[in-house]
Structure formats: structure tokens, C-alpha cells
Length: 313
Image 1 (cartoon, rainbow, N blue to C red):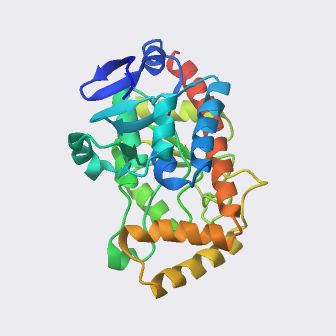
Image 2 (image 1 turned 135 degrees about the vertical axis):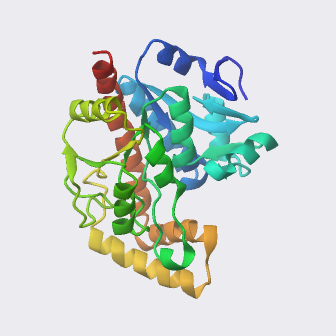
């Protein structure tokens, strides 16, 4: 782990640039590290991670990529640490349930949406950009597979800018569970829940904002009311890269049949399906993933800047 950090809280090390921004109440945007270590293939993972940080800086905010390194929670990894996360094959995927064991072992870990949100909130960061959140998996009646992202967002006051939930999930049930947990799902320039690679899903959202300023005012109101839940800002993938929903559903259906035939189960299912979608679409899902990640980083920076102004009064 690099030097040159200040300890903000027990077990959390914050990059000096991020620490200075937080002390001065300047806008900061958190970024997860699972997308670097487990979400994108090389060399796209490192290129995209650098591109997201650059987009946040261009938008007037400070990027803070979060990971577990050397037995510490690191908020704002260095350039060298970013490259390590992208290139190493021995980086654990760390959700809330895994966090203590990975920290205790001293092993490097890439944080999921749930863990990143929790660490960001502890550090005082209110805005977080990612690709898509986890949710209720298809076939949940048999597997009970529900992402920890949902329960974490119900108790952690951060705004997550994403392209909806991952398309391979049961989107109607995911949306219903978020509503049950009291997590607002707000369309950013849309009335429909985006389905990650697709701008469509057929699911109508009850709330919409059309600017960073509107998003910032909603955030301030949510937390001034004493609500402890986060907010999901569902930002559709850019038009030029998105896939049509019907085509995407056909690809997912084919991938699910293939996974069942090959007896893929448990934690192997998601990476298998994502790889199958990439192959089935001729690589277009990968292109959409990169485009939406960069777009979400840009929008998150705008929201962070606007929220800083609203919070300052």
C-alpha cells in the first residue's frame, strides 16, 4: 500500500487528495473496484478505470476509487494501486459478508457496490458511480440469491449513479424489493428503468429528475427528512452503444439455457452469463458496458458538484 495518506477513521486510509477535498467540502465521487478486478477483461478494465477517474476530474470533482489493500480500507487508490487491481489475478471480490475476513488476512480485495457504498459513507462521500447494481436473481424461488447491494442501499445514505440493475437479474422483483426497502429509484432523464446494456426494460419509474441540480435537491431533501436510505439514480446507457431490450432478452434467454445445460451454478453463473452475452452480441455488450461506466462517472461528477452547492446553502 502506498504511503502519503491520512487516517480518517479506524481502519480507513484516505488518499491525501481525497482527504483534503473532504476537509474542504469539495465534491468527491466514489468508485468501486470490482469492475476493475472482476467486471471487465484486460486491457479494458484499466483503461476504463482511468477513463472514469478522468471523467470525474473533468466534471470538477475528485475521484476516490475504493479497495482493500494491506489489511486496510483504502479510499482513493493511487495510479500504481489501480494498475495492480487491474493486472493481479489474486484480488478477492469483497462484499459486506467477506470484508472482515479479507481485511484480517491482509489480502487485496476489490469492493462491490454494497461494500463501496458502506466505506464511502463512513468516509463522508455522498455520491458513488458504478455500472449497474445487483439485485434479485432470476430463479430466486429456488436459490434465494439476492444481492447485498439492495439491503446496503436501504441503510446507507449515498446516491448511486448507475445504468439500473444488471440485465441478467429479475428486474421487476429487484425494483419491487428496492421499493419495499425504502430506496428511491429515480430516472435520470428517463421514466423507465434502464436495463444496464439497454435503455429499456418496460418498467416505469415513479420519480424522475432531468438535471444534476434536481438530483442534488432530492438528495438533500431525502437526508434532511432523516431518511437513512441511499438513492439510486438510474442513468440510461448512451444511445449509440445501447442494445435493444428485445434483442438483449433473447441473448439472456439463450445464455441461461446454455448455463443450465453445462450445469453452471452458484457464483459461476454471473461471469458465465456475462461472457456468453459478450460472445452472443459480437462484443457489443462490452462496448455498452464501457460507455455506460464512463457516462455514469460524468453524471456523478455533475451531481456531486451540484450537491456540494446545495449542502453549502
